[in-house]
Length: 374
Image 1 (cartoon, rainbow, N blue to C red):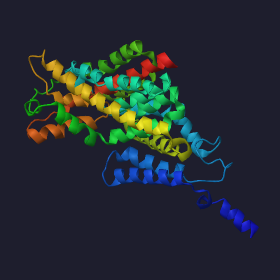
Image 2: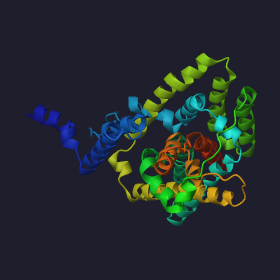
Image 3: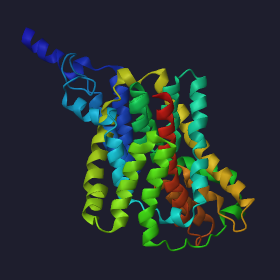
Image 4: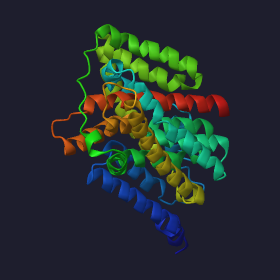
């Protein structure tokens, strides 16, 4: 009987606490959103499963969790805390991204930059709530709606908050179709939503090849802390646009990107153990993250309206909402929203310009924070 009771005492049932049950339910909701609602399934599904696995209780002393030295999950998690996975993901994103729309419309860089106001505004808000400079910077970057950048920055400045920040960033990325349309409707008139823009000009191959090289150099000179992210993003794009490294570009944009996404998402989910995740700080991070994302969207919309005061050829202010880094979801939301008011008004390519500019902008913002606070 003593042996039987000892065996029972080592089971997860015997060690289960309310916090574990709550987090397992959270993981289930994430999987539901991924499978049923199809909200960012490539991210939410492995995250949700990771949340469940990370909250299966076990006897103290067993090296099983991400925080237990020597466990298998801790080895995977080191790819997150060391900042390894995010740059590799940026390499794959670069290999899949077409910057032609941004090259053909350089003024869209301003829209991508305007959307970063959410990052710095939330940084100030987090400071006012008692977070440290490093923690506030890590929370603020959620406004860029860029999961890998959020994870990279928090791994460098606030690793103790990495789990909540990553979950918040990816959650709001998945909820782009829910969060942005009400703000777009509130801040634009029906006349503005129907503005049609001329098709982007055709970009030459020489421009596409030179673009990643020039951006990498200038971005790194402006914010050396962004070198890891912007450098890998532009390397991936150069592999794609050079036309001589198709095999490398395909590998970076498919197998490598998929492997890193699975491992990073799962490890982040596993890091949300109830003892670490269920606290007032996590709730504050989710509230500030939502505020940051909303402010970033509003900043892009209002700046687009401001630009129209000085432009002879007006732009549709809806594309300003795509200044956040959720590529290509924000651009697609703009496209669908515009089609609701004019079925022949196709804004996808125009929205992609500030969208990819936002990716670069959030990475540079992260580099600025790293240079200041690390």
